[in-house]
Length: 138
Image 1 (cartoon, rainbow, N blue to C red):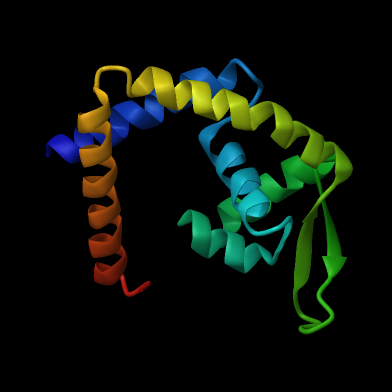
Image 2: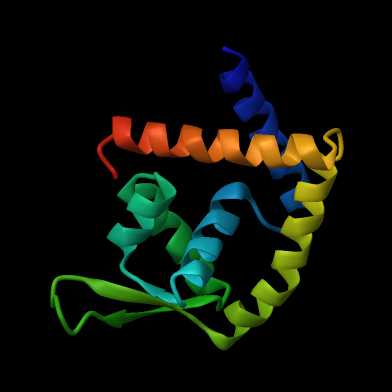
């Protein structure tokens, strides 16, 4: 139960901190997923990567498109799908949010020394691998 409680608290921390910048964990998660994947993905891939429902992703993509951070274009490989691309405005926003995320991480982890941080990183990596295997994503 400790890990679930910690996840809840971490999510609330992210909500509070990201709200200061007009963002949210899901908004940040979608944009970060696009950044990590070179700025182009299908909505289904974004959904899988962020572990969110297609409906949730579609709603967030509508918000991001309205804000001018992403645009949709037809998927040439699959006419039934679209690609989501980060706009120039979206890329500029990443330059602002990445340092914010780094500062948030440092503040959240300031209770650990370097040795503990390395151990925690390994433990979390092992946990992610185990959980991904459990849900069939390895």
